[in-house]
Image 1 (cartoon, rainbow, N blue to C red):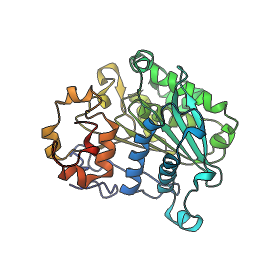
Image 2 (cartoon, helix red, strand yellow):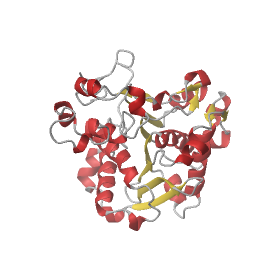
Image 3 (tube, rainbow, N blue to C red):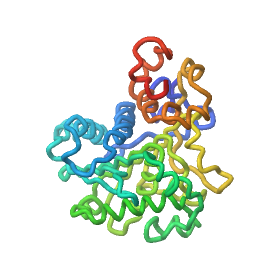
Image 4 (cartoon, rainbow, N blue to C red):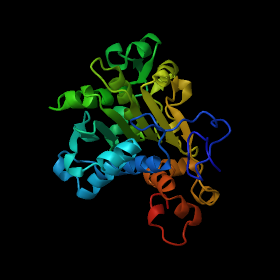
Length: 332
């Protein structure tokens, strides 16, 4: 029932034999491992990005959403720092909304100028154009050395054309922000979180931030949920060798999205795999995996990921069709 001793997973987040012993812990800014509390905040933050869809100005973010973001940022800070300096104050947070090629908000960037931590909340597929213009562009192209670094480029690293184009657009938008030099060159702790397409973008953007010549960050934490593959094997291996990046890849084995694009096209996952096993009653009660994945109410739902990681007792004790179901609405 438990996970690797170095990675204090929740009781129902079980690792298959294939992955056991390979899982590390997400790290706080001081390099110490972060436990289930942090994992739950990460999953809540990934779910929150869909509520932030369409936000173009900080004034559009509600006070409750800002509080949730602040809680996530605090969970990644060293415990001693939180005790000494107090919790993150919402009034001190700074925000930027990054646009994709379609001028839609694709990433919300939040930073604290005094605590020096920055959070990227990347939004997944939310319109048909994302499929045509990004997800289905399956051809690979070489990773530009000036964007992904010398190591990945010299190793023969390739990247998904669609994901790379969108990640470059977002990073270019960030560079145009008046405080870009502070975020990228101020020695900030970077955390990137995303679901599905947002997870692929988080992986690519983490590599770009690490490789930036002016980047002074010592630690980049990445948490993806149901993310597709974005690199070929060479690029993925070099990404995993980067000591500045700690990447955790959460996924349900029943979810088809993390199996895309397929390995037969030369793609491979980057980051440490964290497979999440659903309670048996839900595994028996939910629809078949393919049908469930290609609807908004299946294994691919960020609502399901967040519910399982955030509220395990409810998930384990509630059967479909009985009792309160508000947490199960995403896949009923």
